[in-house]
Image (cartoon, rainbow, N blue to C red; front, top):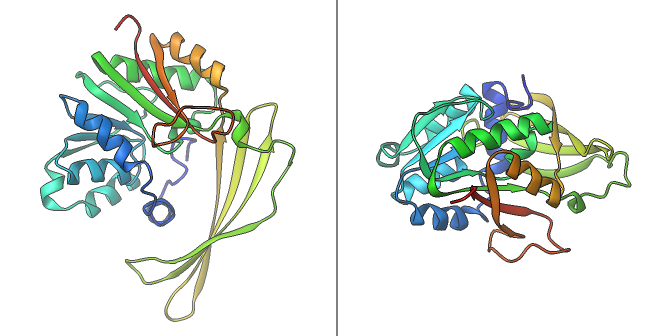
Length: 259
């Protein structure tokens, strides 16, 4: 299990899907960017295909790259036959890959960039993204600004996040979470507890820790420049409103330096 593949088995990929599949706020934004592109799009850290599947269902081509074979397998099993013809699955590390082609749109959704825990990992990923952009192409990625987290807390209390039914099994799954914070390292570590109860009353628990690294706005600008890119726009929401003091997300748009 690595920082890029915390959901490293079939059950954890299923739980990831149950946790995130219902989030749709950013789909229109990525579709808008993809429709401007003259090539299929490339998603880095595609997971179980939440965004890529939407693009394919809207008639758009997409290459979906992820380090986890379990995530990609779940994606493949969930996409319908017509949309599947517009999807190419790529099992690879987003810090080090070479597809020998270029894209008008490369994107990395839902804070996936935060799985990169060092500046070196971040630069490696940004250089890979830059190396796969066409001249005039854009790299769109989402991450949280430092101000999105209350760093005064050492650890947050354990909280109930949701109770949902897993469609495949009918199991009732309860998710609880607690967060530990390291301001000096700009790291958050979420302890995720998934309790599932089957129809026969049997219960199981899965425990997972996910560490993410936040990035400052001007730190981001320097990282992007170190990869041969320049930050051409910065938004504070998926409706592409300006990034400001009240924003709890950064949607960065970068393009090749000199493009």
